[in-house]
Structures are given as structure tokens and as C-alpha cells.
Length: 313
Image (cartoon, rainbow, N blue to C red):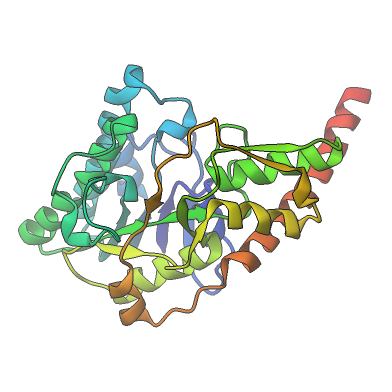
């Protein structure tokens, strides 16, 4: 049995589609408070696992951005990590995968970011508590491997999107655009996108990322972290137009507002180590967007009807 934490997120939900594997999913804090040492110890004493895939995280995207919450982001993510690792030691769990963040790479490091550049500068200031908390995962992996002779690995995903994503106005760019464009189409309105659309981004479809993580879990064993994901890089404008094509939204109704911030021009990782080792073939971004939009429209319609029924009652 393999424990998967954080399985209510976009990546964790994709793990639920993987067949012929025995997973135990922790969806929310109600299932287990990973910040509680006492609860974690009791849980692992009562449940025996051969492996752990640790996806759970508390990020600034949950309304915890800004300087007010940086201590919470730093503390809770590291507490969860060490509660997991200490119970891996206590229970001699055979294999553990922990998830880092591409945001931990120094923004001034050469691109694409190589795994070796992780400690070559400061992190982005916008969520430094979260990013430094994730950076701690790297020495933690090496230290627990060295001291306890356990098979623990660290994976660094690039941007993830797909079904069951966070489709809100404050979500990451791609799912936010899907939501807003769908609403604009239904209301026959134009869609405004900040900036000129020239910045480049890497995104990996969530089911591909889950499959890639599982490959790492089963085949990769090293104290060196590994970047994971597709190396397909597209401009924000291309991504927005892909979304428009997927739902037949008139591109003439898309306005790129040059008076608004354009954002970081490029954020890419060097995923060559993973690609060479695994030979994994990712679906292209356009097809992944089509799958995601189809799911979102179906989900939106189903839930809109449920909301109407609840209002009637």
C-alpha cells in the first residue's frame, strides 16, 4: 500500500486515475493533520505502508500570500515534511517521494533551471516563506538518506494543470483563464488578459505528471533532486489562444492589456535528466488543454444545475 498525501489537489486527483496500484489517499486535514506529530505517529502506527508519495502542501495560493503569512507557510510545510520523514524512519518505510517547487530556484540563476542551481541565490520574495520551506526539502532528502539509509527522493514539478484544478479568479494563470473565458463566452463579453502575452511558460498535464511521479517513485533512487515535467514551452498568448480554440471562443474578443504588468518573461526548468532516464512521452499542451476544458465545461454545467436545484429547495 502506498500513501498519497494531498490527494484533493490537481496532481493528487490524477493519481486516483492510475489503475492496478494500491493507494491510500489522504484528501484533507480531516483525514490526518500532518502538522500534528501526535496524530501522525498514531496514524503510522495503525497503518502500514510500503511507500509514501507526499504531495500535500500549504501554499500562498490558498489565500496565504503576502508578508502576513510567510511564517505559516514556512513552518507548516516543513513540519509536515519532518513528521512524514520521522515516521518513515520509525516504520522503516521502503520508498518515499517528496514534492518540491520550481519557485524555490533563484530567479537570477541561468535558465533553464538545473537541479544543481537550487542554492545559488535567494528565492522569489512574493512567497519566500513557502519557497524557502520547499528548498529545505533538498537537504532533508540527502540527510535522511545518509543517516538512516532510506530510499527517499525529491521531485520538482513545473507548472501543472488539468481536471480538478483550482478554477478561481486567483488561481494560477492557465486554470484562471479557462474559468474567466468560459464565463465571458456565456455572457457574450470580452476577455481581458494582463500584459502583452509574450512571457514563456512550461505546463504539464496533470495525468502526465502523476504518471511521471510514479515512474520516479518506482525507478529513481538518488539523494539528488530531479526536475520533472514536459519541456514544451509556449507564450502566454499561445496558451490563451489554445484555450480559446478548445471552447470556440472568438479570439477577436481577447484583449491583451499592455498597460498591466507582463510578468516574468521566462520560467523554465531543465528536465533533461528525467526525460533521458524515463523516455516518457508527454501529450502536447494543446491536447491537455482540450481535455481540461472539456472536463471543466461538463463540471460547471453539472454543478450549476445542482446549485439551481438547491435554490429551489
